[in-house]
Image (cartoon, rainbow, N blue to C red; front, top):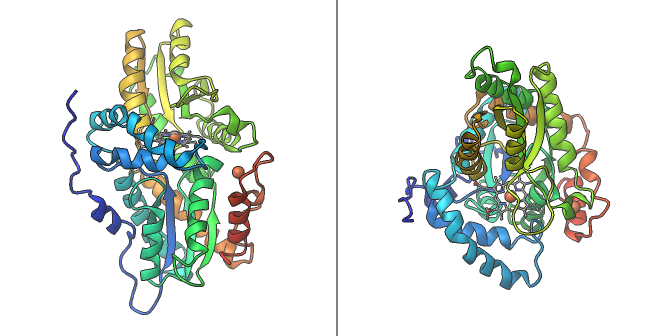
Length: 389
Ligand SMILES: C=CC1=C(C)c2cc3[nH]c(cc4nc(cc5[nH]c(cc1n2)c(C)c5CCC(=O)O)C(CCC(=O)O)=C4C)c(C)c3C=C
Ligand SMILES: [Fe+2]
Ligand SMILES: [Fe+2]
């Protein structure tokens, strides 16, 4: 199939780089407090898919491969056509940069009001596999003369394969001065039960439920769907499964348990064992049991991506319709003002805690997975716990 022309052709590499810093330029003389929005990123155009996949498969914190330097480009090349088609089908690229930019700008503006002591705040985007890459953002921070920086994971729930990988990369860059000399760092590593995040998700579920006939609404099953994790990662003690479950429990409490629900897992890659039950299988099972109304709820990512726009909306929704089901999807957090306020609140509380002497990292952050053998994880945690020194 011919690929659709990229819709966001203006989102080229150079433009993406200029998005590394988002907020208004700080007043002359006062260096900004950097709030670094860390996430995996996605190809802004179809043409960037190969580089995105190559960076992703080269990351030993996400996918440890034998002979990684040789195998990663090979796997990326082979996988590119299939994934290019998916990005073409969702409109020509990933919207993650656009939404992270919008969320970061809104957050920084609110943060100036909520915590004027550390103003001006400036949001930076640091992606692990797409532009602006962590190293590009680090250089921008150095150019801006940043002296105080908050590494703010944009994954609500912590996994060593996601947040851990982003922090490892920032540690590798920051510890050799790429973000500037003597920068004081602190970390926001997880916030999956923050009331503002929970409220934003709950409101999107309520909006989806409202589209069903009033008489049928109460019977609809809420199917929370999160990116799965290989069992090898789960079994070394990674906290992601627990933390996603805690998010779901908090959202259901906020909804007053208005509907029956399950947490299921999507997007597994390759032949190894992954956390289940898989979202597609769960839909089939519910249809078999006569449960024909479902709301799919993305719970582990803060904006749309191929897992929502392609896998949930195109693949699973089509399959479910064939099974005679009525499926809705709760909107991703994207431009939600409730969510943007939550981000600002999380950052403000963190800065208050730092000022109160509670230290640059959370207690939970310091505990490595019991089965972790990745030396960088240990060095990275020690470095951030010392404020980046
Ligand atoms: C919380 C979210 C995510 C976790 C946890 C996660 C773990 C994880 N992912 C892979 C392998 C791949 N993931 C890919 C794409 C992708 N992954 C996430 C999120 C999480 N991944 C997102 C949002 C995306 C899509 C990005 C976008 O559209 O903007 C891919 C590439 C696509 C593909 O080839 O299918 C791979 C590969 C592993 C191995 C893993 C845990 C160890
Ligand atoms: Fe993934
Ligand atoms: Fe780890």
